[in-house]
Image (tube, rainbow, N blue to C red):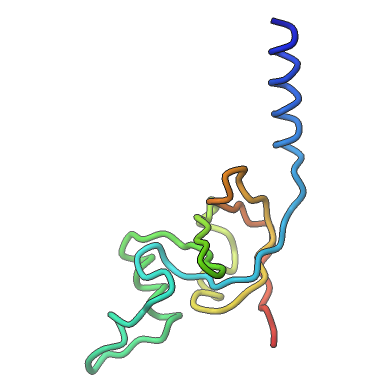
Length: 112
């Protein structure tokens, strides 16, 4: 029993103090992800930024796409998400152990 308790505390401690990681990717929405083509048809064409913001306002969530990975953004109210929607950024934060989510601590434009 003591061993199990020790291992649980150790695992929690490692997870709780995991180092931030920086991921370069695009801030987008959970519906369109990497393809905003649906909103770029017809007379009211939208930019990737405008499409992402519209989708989030209609109930979708912000996500970070990097290559073929999609990270759910845990802190949806993080400052800078709307400003950087549709743009490539360097997102810093704690990535979940399963690699499917990120809790942001910093967003910066990726630059050229």
